Image 1 (cartoon, each protein chain N blue to C red):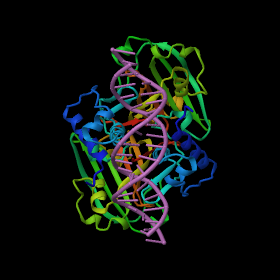
Image 2 (image 1 turned 60 degrees about the vertical axis):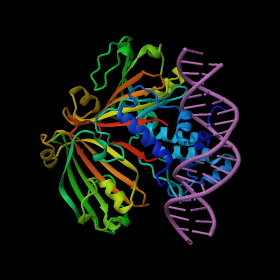
Image 3 (image 1 turned 135 degrees about the vertical axis):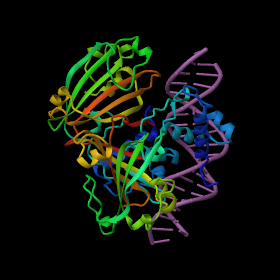
Image 4 (image 1 turned 180 degrees about the horizontal axis):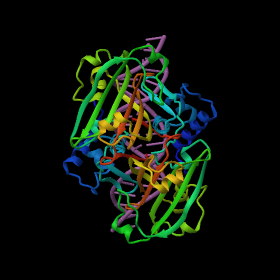
Length: 236
Length: 236
DNA sequence: TAGTGGTCTAGACCACGGT
DNA sequence: CCGTGGTCTAGACCACTAG
């Protein structure tokens, strides 16, 4: 099997939580119990549980066990997961600009590298809706060098990151973000259906990929009145 | 020794990076090299390197090694570390309200639990400066039950979290946050020296502690014009 | 091919939480 | 006290990167 054993167990437990076999407040089987149930060693059981903790499904406590947490439902953004995977609610996406080749003329605090500047830039822009209400404008820039033909295809299951992973074998390994509150420009205000000058959340992102020196740059404008951006964080 | 071995090695490597023994782009010793250098096994070496990756000091890549990253210098917030530890630049703090006992009357999206409501609430408020410029208003609420006498003492090294850890043995094990862009109220605008109605970043936080059912609630108002809020995130 | 990190086994001892 | 998770040893095999 190509999928690591810990990942299989992690997904198995996650499904049981989502199905309701384990409810909020319940304790998952202990590490030792998982060991015998799945015929694995503690290293593997621990890895599965640690991953579930990182995802926010459980809290692990010394001497007690792994307790199922209540998961909040605002946008689980500020993680690497991307929008389509992060939100439980009904989400729609509309392309404002389909992927196209342009020059590098974005104005973020992050700057493309000299190497990237030598290649053409692939750009696309989307408007995201939750419950039929526009909540987020998203712009993306990346060097076309490593994603040839991107602009000629549809996204895999509507997801940018899935497309990168499945078609180009590019994985996101991290990100740097900067958050600002700004006044909506006329254009952004129109898209998000707020007044010009209304406060919107501006997030700029530099994604680090599995290709050294190859980055993806994004900016988001979020209308946070009804849907604040959420973020969970766990130590360890 | 009470400090885990992996933590010692993690701190040792971190110091060498900070001193410049390893510069941006350099590779740290491989896991095997660390094993023989420190007389440890790979489990321990890996743990140290994984922690350094989580902290954003290195990037680990399969088949290559652990490369020292460039660390950006905006506020490393949105982590659990708190303000005083997160920023390299010159930071000052002024109490707007010293710790005092009040009733639970904050209006965040998080609500105190019934158990917390039965006890008195400890509240304090601070204004944070970077380079002599006000950038953040911070309000904190917590049940006084687990921190008796808090209002009668100074903070340990000016840090709220250090005080909790060292005086009350309370550790932060995670947090949930919500981010919004809002228009500054007159009061907040005055404190942050921006115009009333100017966009400010509003962050509400519910910290999870090592005491089950015991939380700490905070809200931050940030002026993000000169100092955007930064956040690094790494997979694995 | 050599060297790296990723996964995994099969143990061990310890620290913490609740009885 | 027992059961939990936290740390650690001493191996093993595999997958990835690069010369």
